Figure 1 (cartoon, rainbow, N blue to C red):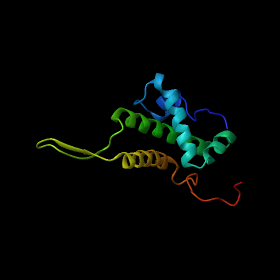
Figure 2 (cartoon, rainbow, N blue to C red):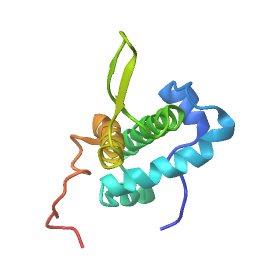
Figure 3 (cartoon, rainbow, N blue to C red):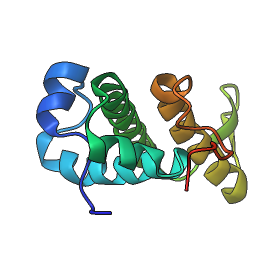
Figure 4 (cartoon, rainbow, N blue to C red):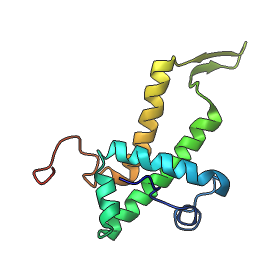
Length: 132
């Protein structure tokens, strides 16, 4: 498995229509997002991208990669802490603890992927009969 991103900035900006990530930051985020895709698809996406024969599924993987890259950007901009509750009068803020925050971050990444890949079978947690 080579370490290449599943999407480039041109696809992100012109096909996906993204604007949340600047060109200079995109390569690193796209590579990280591609690894997240590998994780949530149990590396099935890698096989699809490597074969490059199912153009519809390849495009869905690219869209999911863009969505995850944007979620990673959002999480980076918002910092580590996730607000659990906040009140305005006497300004009180409470944060989710680190374990819950990590789970929440991972859930958000998985949800970003699921938007495009949820009905493809790539995210299925079991084994298909034809898998190695």
